[in-house]
Length: 446
Image (cartoon, rainbow, N blue to C red; front, top):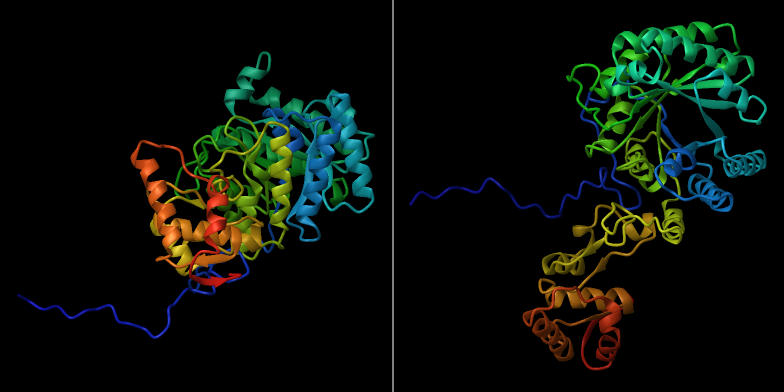
């Protein structure tokens, strides 16, 4: 029998890649030499659309709740610059009241600038002229799916004329227009690029403070993060062509939806290609499958070194607010779902007991303000019990603790008898607390 020499060598200490996975921060992007994209902006940030697209997607907001969300946005971003703007509807009295309350707070030092959203028509442009905002979004549907079927008789030229007339009205009102290129990832290059050029030409005589912005909207979530895919589905290709057309990174936003599971990947692809702002919602509220979850995007922008550190622990309060409104996030929603950091497997629990970073992507308790948790199932083993008791009492019982073994045997008997639901701490708390006085422990206060 041939003996093979091992090629894997032992080392005296583990390599945990501390530059990529630092103790007190989200995972960092470490570029190979020469691989950092030249198109990457110096800074990147996010903008919020909870009061517009989140509400449109079913979030039931009255004025008071809308302002509670806006206040939480301010606490979340603080002075980090991670979240810079929030947009509001202007059509209903409750929305106008939300906007007025937000403007009052912003003038008093709130870090998130309120903006508005309108359809790109002259009549809507007149609605925002005297509201006190500096910038308004304008719905400018860009695909032939829209331009041929929204207008009568329809077509690209008619749509462009309507939009440009509204842009003129917004510029004349002293505001900055932000053109929302709806359905851009199904829109022809022959509409988007000439239209962008026409808007820039129209705005050229106005002050730089009114220089137009453009929001590239992946309205149906069909965009791809692939460099080599053809127009219009390649998000990075479209961003690069818009940059080549003279738009600065800070003049571009990307607004994706999650219909095909690519919302964060597409957001990062847009930034890598030269787009400075991602528009979405905290905790992903929005139409259908939702908008870009800004907490997920910002986690990675922080790892890219492009943004300041927001206070992610504040999103626990936002999560609670959404639960009050009957709009809680799914249990397995990343980062902030009830079960996002909950394990059920004994092998994971054993790993958490021995070295908790083994089964945590980063320091979850410190950065998110959420515990690593466990639900007991037939697969959790004694290790699961040890972990759960330690999490709730600070005391770790020895594996050979007689009472611990008896409790585990009792739970195993329940599962063997057909129990399908997991056992949570509340169910075993009384029995577990009694064990702390009955036998050896490994350590306390850990």
